[in-house]
Image (tube, rainbow, N blue to C red; front, side, top):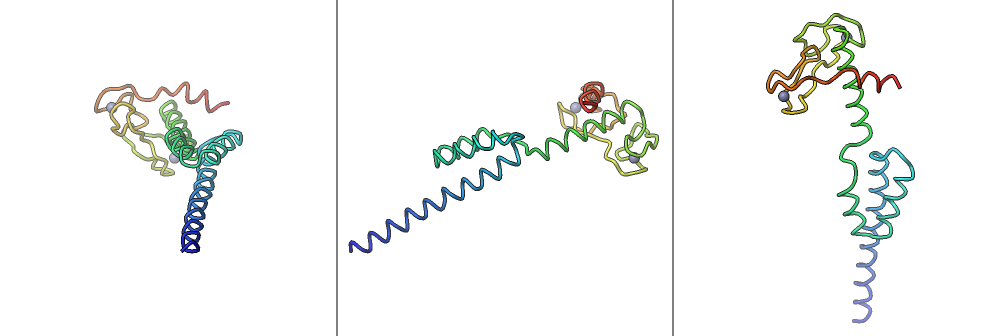
Length: 148
Ligand SMILES: [Zn+2]
Ligand SMILES: [Zn+2]
């Protein structure tokens, strides 16, 4: 009997260790895709390593909602969008754009972006959201940020 309970205990503790190691590996990968700095990734990993369950819960609650790729794509789209609104031409292929174009006829670049207030797609050439009237993105700050 003693042997059986020993076996059960061993199996349980190795299962717990397995889950713990998996959660650390997952947090490392997840943190890398969401945090820009290696130090932040190390901190998140150390937290989960030291506090097996609580650390994981804290990470899930505190991690950035978007991955770096998602943030980058969004920023890039915003810049292209703002550039098109500013110049009236496609920022990629320089085709002249009409007000209601959803994509560039020259290169297929997407020219609409959801309204920040209500989510309605707003075309680059429109000054305001057709649904709620919220002014469309201000091109200036985005273009200035892109120039850096
Ligand atoms: Zn184009
Ligand atoms: Zn709107």
